[in-house]
Amino acid sequence: MNGNQDEKAGGVTRRQIIAGAAVAAGVVGTGLLTPRVLRAVEPPKKWDRKTDVVIVGTGFAGLAAAIEAHDAGAQVLLIEKAETIGGNSIIASGALNCVDPERQKKQNIEDSVDLHFKHTIEGGDFRGDPEKVRFMVEHGLEGLQWLEKLGVEFEPKVYAVVGALYPRSHDPANKGRGAAIVRGLKAQVDQRKIPVMNPCALTGIVRQKPLNGDVLGVEAEFRGKKIYLEAKKAVVLATGGFGADVGLRSKHDPRLDKEVPTTNVPTATGEAIAYAEDLGADVVGMDFIQMLIACNFFTKKYGSLANLGIDRAVFLNTAGKRFVAEDSRRDVMAKAVLEQPQKVLLWVADEDCQKRFNPAMTEQIIKDGYSFRADTLEGLAKILKEKFNTPEDVFLKSIAEYNEMVKKGADEAFGKKPANLKPIEKAPFYASPTQAGVHHTMGGLRTKGTTGQVLDRYGKVIPRLYAAGEVTGGVHGTNRLGGNATTDCIVFGRLTGVNAAKEKARA
Ligand SMILES: Cc1cc2nc3c(=O)[nH]c(=O)nc-3n(C[C@H](O)[C@H](O)[C@H](O)COP(=O)(O)OP(=O)(O)OC[C@H]3O[C@@H](n4cnc5c(N)ncnc54)[C@H](O)[C@@H]3O)c2cc1C
Image 1 (cartoon, rainbow, N blue to C red):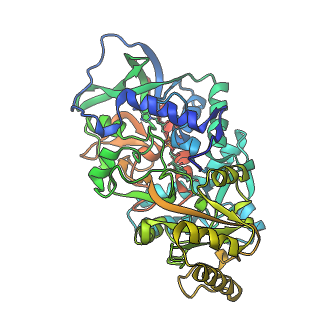
Image 2 (image 1 turned 90 degrees about the vertical axis):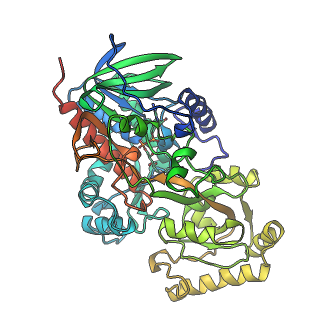
Image 3 (image 1 turned 180 degrees about the horizontal axis):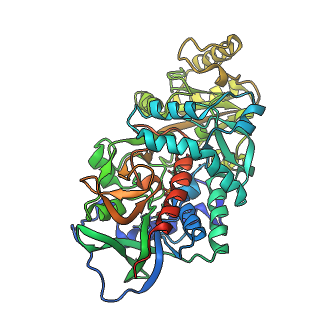
């Protein structure tokens, strides 16, 4: 969550992960910023290594696929271009949405798979593929329970992560975040002795004929050498999104140039999509790129407290006024922020809001001077006056009006939902100046229904090529709900692993 902190993950610090990722990104360049040529990768005279299933990428989707493919009887090899594993998954908050009768009943939350489906489809402006969405929401709980069975613990209570629209988000226990899921899955990969080669960057996909026949394996760069890895059953692309690929993202949305911050790791680039396109693969929804109000105003990097919650919090502009419902869709909030002075929102919250999450991270970001804390609202008002020239009286009036609304149980100004209307009353109080950054790429490779098989531009399956997770398109439509990506990656990662393993091995 906080780009300025050394969040420990898998025995390495987040800073090391980013550094490693940046080094590895250099191996293949940062996506489409590096000139590329359209090319077919010829089958090599000799393969350097053989296995049944080659899985590219070690985030939620790749790790889930690897475990399932192995458990379905296939020999698996994972490759990863970064020096450390985990991609965006390891820095993610790791909130996972699913209908969970046991937890939700205890909190008196009415929910159903149909409602999760409706929220997802409507939240993506009806541009998500209903078949895929139905599959994801129907298998979400199974995915959560699978993770629990593998040893990943989740909090007993659900909530609504920013942009989730409904309280069905599950946080990994003990503030473990996405790193806890990655660590849990990686431990299972190790237990199964599934090899992981890294840094090892995919540089092309090998097919019998450029636009015909089976996918046979991959070409990759490993320790400065070109190598060929044969996949007797299938290749699975789980290479994540392209939020850090300025060339590719600004091709699809010219506003998202290099000045726009991103929450993503530097290896979130789109070259794997291009390699699949070299084989004729189709893409879908590439223009749908999500901005999230999660970047710090001062650093322009991932690292705001705004992700910590929206119930005991308000969003104010630097004039000290509310301007949007804090529980709106992510795209609505991002657009609203972009229209404010300095394109910044001040997330203002109380102790009960922030304490649910990671106090150590909060301490660090405050120590760094990137967010503020005061014992009284008046004290916070003084700080904001000094930093942003926010009028103290307007600020205090906005908080008082908000707390009045909470008592009434209705937000007549912006329509924040009654369930999220909680008071800002418990000291100390926090303010985090926040900006929108590129967060999630909803578009990507087009897959067949709920099989994970990659389709070509004519709707035909590219034999033995699969994809899962953020590298795929079509699930989330125009706007992904907060907490739905973890579900997507786990559900489709597992499915893809099973299906890849079911392919008949070539001789
Ligand atoms: C800061 C942050 C917080 C988030 N919080 C949440 C949340 O709470 N809930 C939620 O639902 N979603 C959240 N998301 C989104 C979600 O975490 C991601 O969509 C998800 O982790 C993507 O998983 P993945 O397995 O598809 O890709 P990744 O986890 O990004 O993994 C892809 C891997 O592939 C590797 N790779 C890429 N190209 C190549 C190549 N050419 N060769 C070899 N390897 C390659 C990358 O280095 C990377 O390690 C968050 C995202 C971010 C950035």
